Image 1 (cartoon, rainbow, N blue to C red):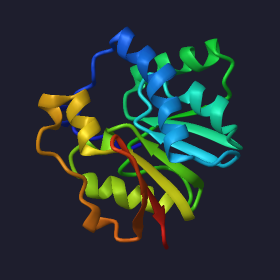
Image 2 (tube, rainbow, N blue to C red):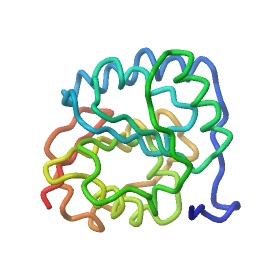
Image 3 (spheres, rainbow, N blue to C red):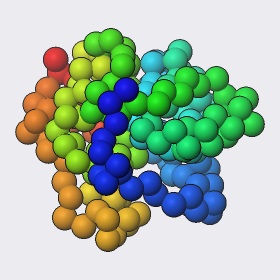
Length: 183
């Protein structure tokens, strides 16, 4: 496992109300607004405490559901969370910038802001592109969503799309976007 330098990683506080809003409002709204396909292999990068995994499982009925995070404590919380809800999800302790999955392992990769908050996001986008099957979807929060959620931490941040030229934008809503892997 290759984790970022400790001074570069700052975990987000667990806010129970925010967690519930993500699980019961934000994730279902995103899935419906973007029309995320059912039955695929889905990876959530930066899954944290696993709040998004139960609604993804319920609404997308994935063939495979994986949550990846660099924070072992958050993954322990995620394990408890998905187990309490009876969700079958693989949880992987690793870095989005060096993922342990073979090429083209996933049909959908979801990111609820991780790439906005790490150093070297271009490496994360390259890895996401690598593990995403041709025609697969990368679903991400827009800068507007990030600014609303984390105004201080997100101010002025943008994703370096030039570093991932095969991720072609094809769908978007105010708070979320989707790019398709044209590779």
